[in-house]
Image (cartoon, rainbow, N blue to C red):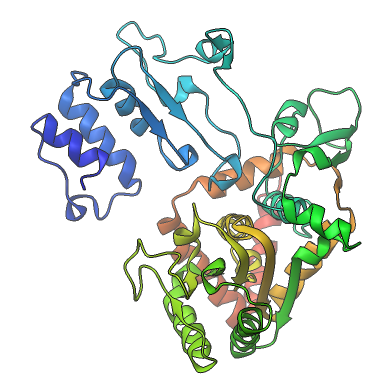
Length: 422
């Protein structure tokens, strides 16, 4: 089956670029679709009656502009997104930023065009504040970690207006009347029952069980201990609790080492009589929920899937990764769970993460914090906007210096900070 890019190339008589052509390009998807825009010089065949764009937060503007140009009038385009699953920004870009401009310089799709209703009954733009899949406690822990609400190193990102919090299913208790928030505001934000429709939560309440039972946090000294504990618990769930193996997903958020980690877990499960599949490594990528087998994946493979029980391994990476991408992986992984979520990792970084998670849970079902300085958020958004390949080597170098010569690392940082402080 052809992808959108190659299909449009074929229909327009354009030779598609290959992976070798874009191997060293930073933003490969943008490059491919800019190639289409340049090659067609604005003259596109209108091919599609209806275009649906899922996971829209993952695509750059040239993709949206091409889709607009190949859609037939009256441009039936539907795009859905989750701000928190974007790597660089929790703000979804406005249509003026996505769909390009026409010959007169006016945006092809404007925010104004999305106001109101179709046929007086169907809203043109709407949000889904309810969480049907992920439990309220799981979603709030995931949101809390993504924003760094209780992080000892400070906030990772923040939402600064009441309307966006409401769209995500939250109610602002304090401050009561402000539409936008500023540094120093004492925030109290809650998630009401009506915006969390996970069936399991209601079932737990009937048996006087707390929602927090759905989240398990464990720290281990060694990787082998973490793997052994996960394998043993999975065996228990299958053979004692009668959980179907295909309803269990294991995700390692250490994407670079996922093959080795998941191979070790697969071997441990096999020893215990549990079958597993590893899509994209030992089985075909499209094999995800194989009957009778536990699914072992990286966060990239987990996106768009879900299970009754999810194990998140190597969670310590969320604290080690100074680019904050691993926090996003952690958010994605936790929110795959329809029911129970086991979060584990190793070493002092995991202990720090466990402490942060417990601090989030201590205020549940509220978030309580003092609104941060916008300058810190801007700096961290800038870090997150840099492509992953250009930060990986730099971070590895810094980590090596920190491990091998922490005194030099500290002295370098202190000198530069004092020398260039304003």
